[in-house]
Length: 322
Image 1 (cartoon, rainbow, N blue to C red):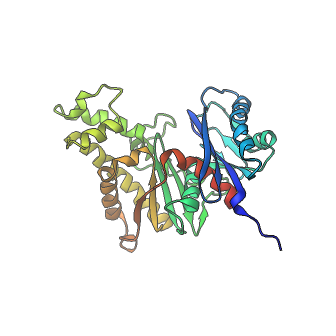
Image 2: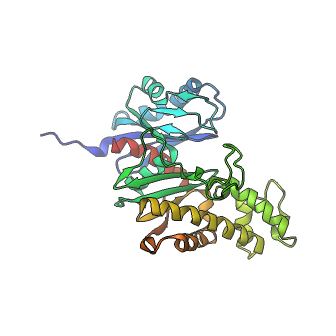
Image 3: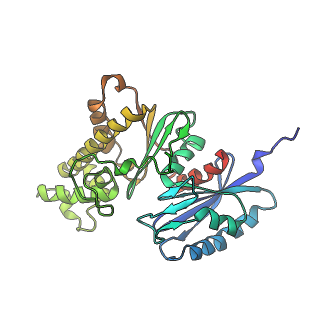
């Protein structure tokens, strides 16, 4: 009988964002041994992107090659298809159409590569290394530039028949509501609860409150960060921004809960730094809208992973699980 020494196994975790790609070597204990970044948005040709990624990552791999075994590459990316190994029509990436990312990465790095939606990768990371360890039923909500989500039921990520299940940010929560800047849909959760959506709301509420501290910020500065700073000072308009946003988020969450009956909803992303200003009205609205059988059963939790590390850990976790 042979015993596998997991302590010497490492995975390369890669998170592809619209502007920046983060990557790092991760061991089986969830420790990032080293990491780096490259720009995503300067490569119109995906092959040029992979060439630069290899040029920067390969010295890291060679540094650990003598003492560690690379068992694969895990990638998180917008509009990534776990089944097909592709990125398909991602609105915030320069590569149009269908990009065969797993095929291209395997050819370049000569090792197993797995890819999934970036929000699904975050959910995997929470299951493997974070706050969702031991949970079998939960929803991961990422509140950043957009609204991402990963749904876990009975210990398994929900992919759907085509690999794209779980786009909760694009569900319609306000019929015929705010038009989304990219998809053109009206009233989606992302149009309100993302950092982009909150910036729009902040400008709207600033105009309604002539005495608001938000008037001390320029039009470009009037965003979620400004709203938080003013909310901390008790500014009525800023507090209303988060109450309004939280209630819309809560309405959406009630539907998600009645769909999948999770033990917990985990939150991750820059917007979550607003804390109770956002999450308290969200929880109260969710509970108000739930059927009695679902009430008082769902915990809210905020990811404890470092924001800069979570994407890498989540991507790397795909390798340990597959």
